[in-house]
Image 1 (cartoon, rainbow, N blue to C red):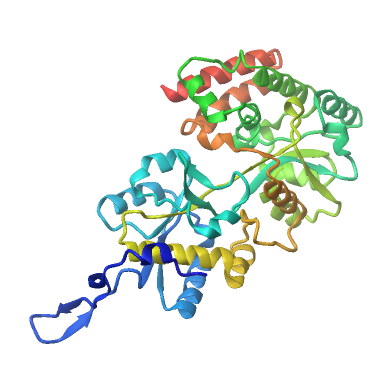
Image 2: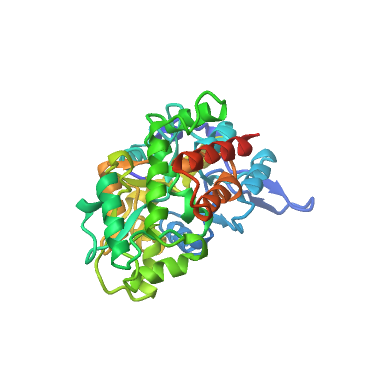
Amino acid sequence: MLFNKKITAGLTVAAMLPVLAACGGGEEEEAAVEPGETITIFQTKVEISEQLEAAAETYEEETGVGVEVIGTTGDDYFQQLQIRLSNGTGPSIFSLQNATVAERLESYVYDLSGEEFTENIAPGMGLMLDDRLVGIPYGVEGFGIVYNKDLVDPEDIADYESFVSTLEEFNEQGINGYGLSQEAYFLIGHMSNYPFSLQEDPVEFMEQVTAGEVTLAETEEFQRFGEFMEAIRANTPSPLSVSYDQQVGDFVAGETAMIHQGNWSWALLEDFGVDFEVGLAPFPLEGNDKLAVGVGSNWAVNAEKEPEEIEAAIDFLEWLHTSEEGKRIIVEEFGFIPAMTNIEAEGLDPLSQAVLEASNSGETIPWSHNYYPANVVPNDFAPAAEEFFVNEDMTGDEFIENLDAAWQNAVE
């Protein structure tokens, strides 16, 4: 049932009465918009702006509830959101990136825990603040080792020994066994996610690193990560002059057997005319057998709004995630990999299908990089990684020590 009953029970008769406003001192009067008759959405993903506006029109036609989509360039979204929330013009529904942002907006995020449709959120994908569900995931994305099935058997890259052996064999054949690229997140941002995400509590671990209570260099997962990076440097061409396009293009041409990328790379693979089967495998740090799957953003409801507007906002989100039209929009129009187990996505590309299956099974590791200090990847980690690839005398241990220094520089 779409219309939320929990809040409706609390409405007063006065709130249901028409509000009349005088115009220009005359007798003419017009009805103001009742709370809940119209909702507003302010969200950060500009790629779906037009599709969301179309969805809003469809919803209004079906229910009579107006939905206004407020535009944004995306670059200064959070600053704009804070201004709107603080001056009382905040939207009914807004984007919420992660728990760190949710903490900063704690008084504005409505507790969605009791909403029945949220039970369909895939395991571990709901945005929680303490014990409260405060964000419904847009969709999920994932990354790992994108491999050519004609060249690579996943069993041959299941642990450190087999991974290195495979790299060495490709190197002897004149094939790049493992391609990274020069962009900060494709060079080190996503790769560095693994040793953090294999910690028992990645966020707590990062807090301890920030406080100086523990170092990356003394942590086993990072020590092993340094060994992997040494093996990659020793057996593959330098990624420092390789762009993302070239990385994917070399893979499609068969010059590279594996690249580290995510499901988003499928569009470029198609553009380059990939003509072989492609798989997505976990990066085997410490025998890891799970893909890194995460959520880029979430839908949140403004807790500071009138109860009727909160109710209307929740109704819209329920429609979007449970009605046949809403589910179609998420998959076909937004192009999201659903983060809800009740939404089937047919015809996904092989990389997205692998991410969806991992997400629904719960067999994933998190995107810890969402909780890194601001800009540490481009400003601090990337220069450390570039130095590592330039200086072949630098050991993996020294590289990890440099990541320690980079982290501390970022949190000063």
